[in-house]
Image 1 (cartoon, rainbow, N blue to C red):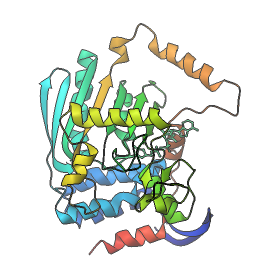
Image 2 (image 1 turned 90 degrees about the vertical axis):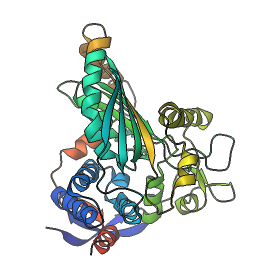
Image 3 (image 1 turned 180 degrees about the horizontal axis):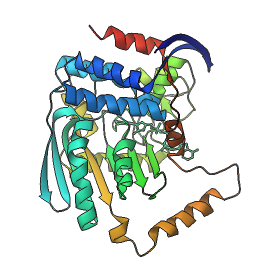
Image 4 (image 1 turned 135 degrees about the vertical axis):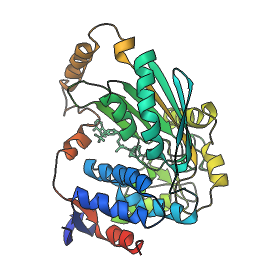
Amino acid sequence: MAKDNVEEKTGNIKMSTTDLTLDEIHKLAFDCLQQNGADALNAELLATTISTAERDGSLSHGLFRLPAYVAALRSGKVKGDARPVAEIVSPALIRVDGDNGYTPHAHAVGLPKLIEAAKTTGVGILAIHKTHHMAALWPEVEALAEAGLVGIACTNYMPAVAPAGATKAFFGTNPLAFAWPRPGKSPIVYDMATASMAMGEVQVAARDGHDVPLGTGMNADGELTTNPSDIANGGVLLPFGGHKGSAIAMMVELLTAGLIGETFSDESKARDNGDGGPPQGGQFIMALSPDRIAVDDWEAHCDAFFERMTGLPGPGVRLPGARRHKNRLSKAPRAINTALVEKIRSLMT
Ligand code: NDP
């Protein structure tokens, strides 16, 4: 049962939150998507992506994204009854035509085939076309690691990040995710925007009244700022790590668009209808089999490496993915921003 009006202090302002169980979050997302044009299968797959993001504390890619998903269904940019189709191009290459739907459906169709290919040949590539990706990337690479494979995934978006040396947006926030399998244990998973901060996090900071670190982005005049609203509205994000992050963001563009034949971020924007939902684009996913590629005992070899790493002197090394995996264990209701819950309910007729 939802419990309203929980008040908690978050940063500079008081935010009202509503407690929702994970089942309630899933049902809210499913009902909202279905009432806005998604059929049961597409609504189920996307609602699962949203509720697992809330379960793991990926707050910028859970319910927060639902209004934008709805906007693109309502405008007709995204098909609510998409039926992605997989083509086995070669033993190691699978191409999925996403049928202009949301990407979780393309994953449901393509990932099992990618897993099979990588286990057979040692390496596999899944090239996804004609989808709309607005979610976190860890679910796809984590699914590969749970199958005993190394997973690498990236996607582009619409221009939000200025390449090193520019003041105008050109790259998307271009996330890159990596998962390493640890049979019997939680995989190591990192999933990060190549921007200094994901735009979703900047928007959440603006909504909740937090400043962002200097170096996150510039305002509309090309000046560095700590005000997230100035970055999100007319300003621009910067890549992480200066020219090095800029090079990795460019690599994401090339793998997602140049290699698989989909759109670069600026091209995605040029053809987007501006409804606020994610543009049509592609995704690059690669799977590698350590059982096939590594020499004997790769598990023990890597476990010893992680032990040495986490045992280093200092305030404490934590393995990426550990925060989410810990959040996942809690069965407690999640505190969702009340204004967001009300906004989602208002989208349901
Ligand atoms: P974060 O900077 O919050 O985290 C990046 C990674 O670093 C995570 O895997 C996180 O693990 C790990 N990490 C964080 N702190 C530490 C630490 N102290 N020690 C070790 N590891 C750490 O992510 P971003 O803000 O860059 O990205 C957020 C999300 O936005 C991602 O899921 C990304 O896919 C998504 N995104 C999606 C886009 C799209 O177009 N679809 C565009 C841009 C971003 P942990 O999870 O355990 O904290």
